[in-house]
Length: 237
Image (cartoon, rainbow, N blue to C red):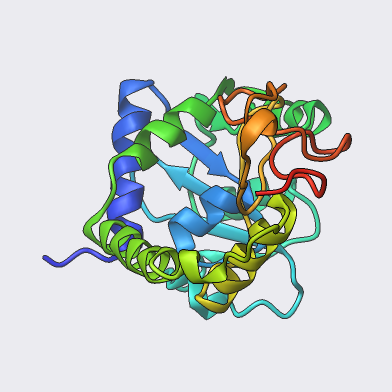
């Protein structure tokens, strides 16, 4: 039986759920919603250990539910998360004894709200579990990485032609960013961790390359006081 990309990923999440003794989990962050569905909506995906997945969409109100490719009756528009309970009980499912939530990204107020909703369930943090599931890539994901590498290589091959004597780090960095965007880069970088911020790229040289970073990675550069990393206008190449 040929499995869809979503089915493969749900299977990987369920393997983690079994290891962590979870009967169900709820995925809600944009990055994990995209991981499952190849699209982003504001809402929740309810994954029981067995049975069909449910998705609940809050925004946008004109979202195409058919894009989720779930069985009829398993995609719903909702106004509030409490409606999740109503739907899964109407489908004949019992509330789970143990439920996983994305605790590292979910606000405490929302966590408390779900605790109240699932009052008989033991609530566990599954953020690390989801990262474990995502760490082993599917063949589709591997091909996407290869395609991204090919696009990067095409731009990097031409970087020497972007350079002009006397350019500042910042000007050189902007030129590379411009060519990367033209080559297909979305310009968006997601970072996990409260001590992590990033940008599309950095060019650093000389003393600026030795500037320490306040973040959880080695790359430095003075940057700007509001984002102290990477290139400056003052440093010439």
